[in-house]
Image (tube, rainbow, N blue to C red; front, side):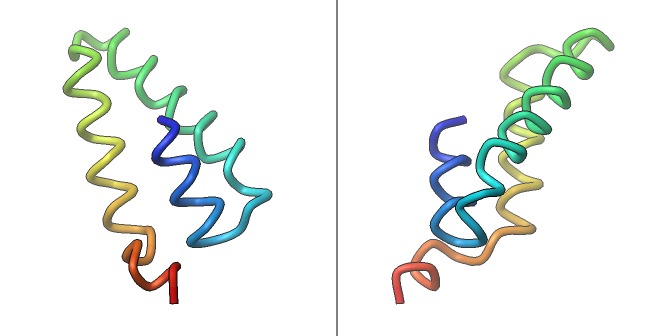
Length: 61
């Protein structure tokens, strides 16, 4: 979750970092309530974030 927050803060907009981690946490909680494991739910969040966020090296440029 901290890596996601950092990627959002440095790759998109710093002020969106808290919101992104909140939404990710809500997704994980909902998926766990539906019967998924925490690891499965976290993997879903990571895949979704990777698809939406710019590559890390683009943020460093």
